[in-house]
Every structure is written in C-alpha cells, then in structure tokens.
Amino acid sequence: MNFAQLVTAVYTETNRPDLVAETSQAILEVTQSLHLSDLYYKDILEATIVFDQSTWYLQALDLTSLPRFRQMGYVRKTDPSLTQAEQTNTLPPVINDVLYPNSYYNLRFNFLKRVDIGDVLDRYGYEKLDIWYQAGTQINIKSSTPLQYVVVGWYAYPDIGVVNGSPNFNSWIAVEYPYAIIYGAAGTIFKKIGEDKSASAYLDMPKPNQGEESGGSFYQQRALLRRNNIRAAEE
Image (tube, rainbow, N blue to C red; front, side):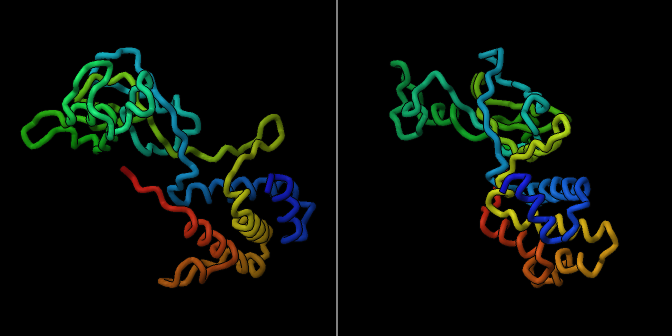
C-alpha cells in the first residue's frame, strides 16, 4: 500500500477520519519501528567505495556519506577494473598475465571481519589484517593488500518523512505487510485518545514464552513479518 491507502485503512479501523495529523504521525511512527525491529536484508543498501589512495593498506570511510545510514552490515574487497568472471574464486589466479598465489588472490576479494575497537591487535601485539572497526561516525579498515575499492552494505533507515508538507514514503513493509502498519497505527491512535480497551485489541503485549502471535493484532502481524524475512546475520 502507498501512504494514502494506509491512511484510509487506518480511518476504517478507528472510525476517526477527523484525526488527520494524528493518523499520519502514527503511520510514520509505526513504519519506522517495524523497520527497526530487526535486521532485514531488504533494508540493506550497497555501494562501491573508491578511495583516493590506491596503494594504502589502511583506509577510513565516513559513515555520514552513506544515505540513511543506520548500522554497518559488511565490507568486502573488490576491484571493478576486473571482469565479473575474474572476480570469482573459481578462476585460475592469472590476472592480466600476472600469476598470483591462490591465497593472495583470494585475499583481494574476501569479506573483512568486524572487530571491536579494542580488539585490533593479535596476541603478539601486531595489528590484525583484513578487519574493520567502527570509531564514532567512521569505520577504519586494515587490509593485507593495497586497498582502493570496497563494497559496503549497510542497514538503512526507511525512506519516510515529510517533505514540503507532504509525506515522502517508501517502505517495502507497507507493500508486503501493510496490516502490521495499519494495526499498529490504529492501536496507537486509540491509545493516544484514551480508548484503552480498543487499543488493547491491537497492542496487547504477547504472553511470556508464547511468541508474538499471542499478542494483539499488531504483534501477530509483526510475527509474520519476522518469520517470513530472513534475519541478516552480523558479520
């Protein structure tokens, strides 16, 4: 559903078409909370980053440059100058007539490991290689090979909000699981206007150890969302 369709559906649930601003706000609020309720592959954005220096082993990426950045997902070495076939690990390690040892070749394209900021040294006191860690609003990358190109994937906040007084709304959850938003917004409206009995049908908390399906309509729909969308594991 698009934003206008969600508004109409919430009016149907609440029978309160007079609550125009409240309904819009509730839809935006619930949509964001659903996107943030887990790590979903469909919230991942991906981009190829090109660093200015091609011979450096240590690079830094400003996370504020990534649109709607929420949380880092992964960092992978790449080299766009090569063909797609050349970037697969099944090829003989010969690139541009240069023979590379298999181990070195694979290191040019592997996923880098995320470490905590206090875990960048190995047990001998040397810096670990092929890692990245976050420090404030940037990630620092330490490579075992010269590093100019990486592919980064990050979890993005949903593309929702208000632009020039009109909703800017783009949510895959609204398309695939609209009733999670509708029921959550309806329950929020009832709660705000003091109709707690009506709100409970939507927002009753799930019973302990019985899963979200044991809760109100909103939680039942959220259970469907989570069950049918594979949780993205952190690297």
